Structures are given as structure tokens and as C-alpha cells.
Figure (spheres, rainbow, N blue to C red):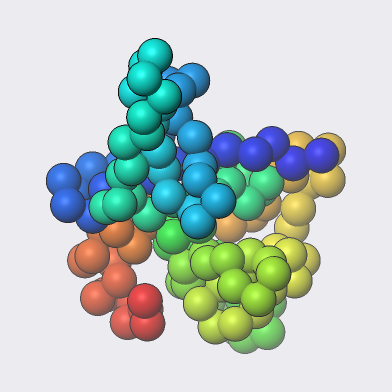
Length: 140
């Protein structure tokens, strides 16, 4: 069973939140909210984009999240060719930016079933590494 983990990109402060206190929740409309104590009020974090863990690890044991830019060996082309794409959740599943379902994409590189570790490598993410988005001409 896949571990359910989120991180959040704050679009206003330009910071990635990777750990949360126990009083943070995800509302029904997908916003990150924080319980404000005894009065029962909730503070919404409207400027946060939630990013979910895919359940897979890259070749270095790093967790692959939505928005991560990954590099993988391409099996359909000559040896040494690398494919760079980013991970998104769309149409009910994790996909790479070319529309390939991530599970299918990961089947194109090696997955160690016992650890869910892949042969792909996380290079960065589309929020903090705009230089990689530009370099690889990713359509975010």
C-alpha cells in the first residue's frame, strides 16, 4: 500500500513546505487549512499548491512527487538517450508531461517491486527549478 504524503508549494512566499503540524488538514475543496485552537476557526492557505507522493522512489531513494522533474533512460531510442519530463496528477492517475501514465512510464524503466524504487532520477521540481523547465522546454 502506498504511503499518503503531501508537500505544498507556497506560490506567494515561494517556499516548499515538506513537513506539517498535526493541526493542518486538507479541506474538501482541496485547500490546506489549519485549525486555530479552541474557537474552531480554520485559516486557509489559498496560496499553496498541494503535491502528492506518487508511491515511487527515484534511483537514489528520493520520493517522487507531483511537480517533480525526472530524467530516465529512454528504451525506444539509441543507448544513452535521456528523457526529461515532469510528473502530474491528471485523469485519475500520475502521468508524465507527455500524457503517459506514470505507472506505464515507470514500466519503461526498471522498478524494484519490493522497494518501489525506479531507475529514474529526480532533477528538481517545476516550482523551484524554473531553469530546468526552460532548459528541457517542459510545457507546464
